[in-house]
Structures are given as C-alpha cells and as structure tokens.
Length: 402
Image 1 (cartoon, rainbow, N blue to C red):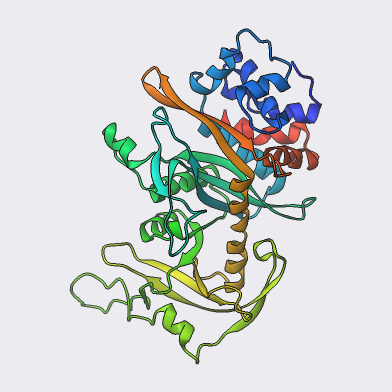
Image 2: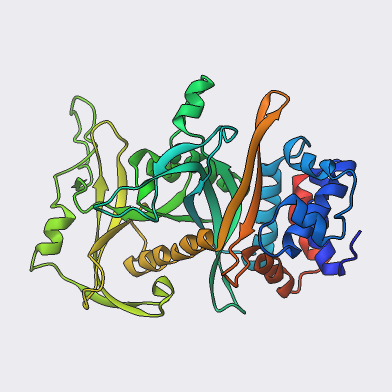
C-alpha cells in the first residue's frame, strides 16, 4: 500500500466508513490511482500507476464499481461536507446545475438516448448526438491561490433516456425532475444555510422554480424575452366570492421593454464576466409574477441586460427572490461559466453497462483530455490540502453522518 502524508491520508480515510473492510482496500487503491493517473483513468491505468500491473486478482478492483455495496449518495454528502468545511464554513452556498452528454455507442450501453448536441448545434442548425446524459450538481467557491471561482462537482446522476424507461416499464423523469431531486437532496444536507442555485435556460421551468422556492432555495436562471409577466394579485376584497385571483394586470413583455426608448438603463461593472475580467453592461430590473396556464405562479425579479458595445445580444435573467439586488443577480449568474469549462476539461470515457444480478450497472471511468493542462480532480484535493486542514478539522461533518 502506498504511504501518504498524514493530511492527505485524513482526506482519504473519511470515505472508509462507506465501504466494507475488504472493499475499502480496493476502493482506496482506485481513489489514489485516479488522482495520480495521467490521461484516461481506467482501472488498468490505475493499477499500473500504483504498481499493481501484475495483480492476478485484478477483477476485485472492477467489482468495487459494479458489485460492491456502497452508497454514492452518502459519498456525495461526505464530499460536500469536506468542501464546505474547507471553503465555506459559514454564509450562503452557491450551487450550479448543468448537464452534459457523453457520446457513447454500443448495444450494452442500455441507458443511452438521442439528444441535441449543445456543442455542435446552433440556433439555425440542429445536430443530434447518441450517448448518456449526466446531470451534475457543483459547488461554486472562490479559490484564493487560483484567483478565480471553481465549480467543484459533488453529486452526479444519470438521466436515462425515455426509450430505456419505456422498455423497463418505468416512469420516465424529465431533466427538470432529476434536477429538482438533486437540488432538494443537497438542501436537506444543508438545512441551516442559504442556498442559491444558478443554472441555464433548460431549467427555466415554472414547476421546477416553484418546487425550489417552496424549500427556500433561490434560483437564478435565464428568462424568455416573451414570457408572460403580470403584476401581483390584488388583495382579496371582503365578501368576494369565487377563488382568489392568482395574478394582476398583464405587464409588457421584455421585448417591448427593450425597445421602449423610455426605459431607464443603469450602467454597472460586472467583475469576472465569463472569465474575461470586468465588463461594463447596462441593466434594468423590476419585480413581476410569472404565470402560464396550468402552471404554478412564481414571483420573480427580472433583470434585462444589454452591452453598450453590442458584443452580445440582449438577454434576460430571473431570480426567485424578488428582494435581491439586480447587480448581485448578474454576479451570481456569470459564475455559471465555471460549469461550462468543467465538462470540456474532463472527458467521460470507457462506459460499460452490464448485468450484475438483476440490476444494470454502469462502470464510469473519467479521463482528462491530453491537450489540457488542468486536472480538476487533482486541483480539488490540492485545494483542500492548501487550506491547511488537519485530521481534527475534517471529521466533524463525517461524524454527523453516523
């Protein structure tokens, strides 16, 4: 077994209670090897880098991923606790939610589907991609020695295709349903913290926003320029019959607000604009009620942005907390750029789906592109160590899990 520094060993040993003793011996090797292995992190590469290339019982290391009984959700909760203890011991927590498509083919990749390729598609050109759809929840925290905000994934779920669920007679869940479950799970892990979620327009759905708002999760996302906005419902008059109104008078669409010459614009400086430094933009904002027939009513604060230099098209943002300041909403949203650069840096490869008893299990190996100098997993552990964490400061959160 590799000998590790005490502070590094304390991080690794936090995950030992999640495994049985025999499984942990193999899982520890996989975890250490995944950090040390350059390039694609396959089980064979991990065994080579740890000096076990001639191991006769190499199948035991594969069985950690496809047969051993351990909870990925418990591991995610433990990882989130370590990250919070290191970077955000107090204050509000900013989370990011995003999905990615892992391009995979083959008969044994049972949960794959046909999706829109977000990289190769454009507004006028649609490109399909076959593969697996993964949804990842990440913690957005500033790293002092890196000089920027990092997105640290801690909870990831596979969203199977509709065909996969239909063949197994299961109810198909939309991407927003998976996203709601992930966010509310993280919310239950942090009951005493203010949680803010930033995500893209794919999650700008009234049912999704209303579910998060009921659990006191603030969501910041994009808003359609033609969204139906209304004034808040007027107070109910004494003696009135019928059900109370859910909305007030209809407000002009943001498209009309954008073209109205009487609109008052405020020029502000947004720091860290998509990794380019400070950017001067013009914003206008107001509160409204977003409603659609048959959907929940969500009160929001909308923020309309435009660039004085016309380097990007005008866009609109929404926040489910109407009391928030417009500039703060923009600052939160631009940090979503860190989610976009996580997936290009990390390539999921070598996915094999096979039968293990009566369950379909996916063996996922995560690799890093050879032409990219950044390894997010190595940086994540280095960031924890850089914080000067000792063993005594790592265990409070893990002890609460037992």
